[in-house]
View 1: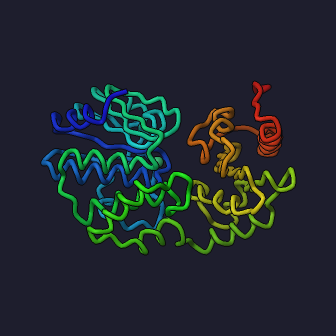
View 2: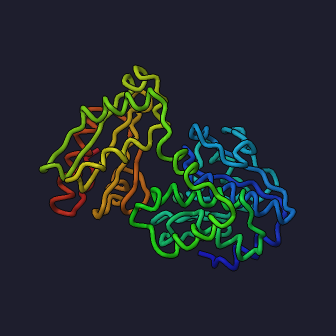
Length: 327
Ligand SMILES: [Mn+2]
């Protein structure tokens, strides 16, 4: 791994960048991308923003209109590619092009993020990749303004759950407080990220909540939503990551899970915990993430996958152990 100083020096030395985040972009991924974009642009460098997947609806942040949407046709040419908030393999449909970059920089905060690139900075102790971008821009002496402050603040709000998750600390609040000094609108950002939902989603949520299941006296809770249910409520299943935050509200829950059949036979598993390491559980199923927030994608029969994952989670909660999968 490289030092932040080496990353900063590299950014000073180069002039042509393409900045990408992860598939299914979330506020931290977007905040990191836009923060770097505004910062490097202010230094007179040429930057592009590329995403494989569409943005969450309702976000009105500055710079989102600069993002280009590309798929497998993406080729970086001679530009240096900077991957933020994930490993290069997790950039979705553009991953093939990203990995062909002549020069690749990887900046991330995911636990056990392998980090791939000519320069790699992965720091799991940081609450958000947007915090790392904040540090980089300060080291580059980029002049901060409302635009830069807003997108970085929004990234931090996203990954700390609005300063409610365990990754919230004094340093995060200090940086957030400093960013507010540039005229950021915290109420608007929080509402856009957490509490602005279409009717169809709220009705789907009602359905998912009424069918929520538990095991071990409610220590494990899960929601399971089939593809046909998303169709019935007219909701894009890929835009429902946050269902898991409702499952975890159960008072007794130590592990909260959501199974979303995003297309027939393709299931996204979201995991949340207050103390239990669900990062290990996600990796057991081929996924990844943080200790208290993680996920995986599985394919196969929906009911069988729900049964396997929930029974594995129960055994894991009882014994703390994960055994080899049968398949
Ligand atoms: Mn993040």
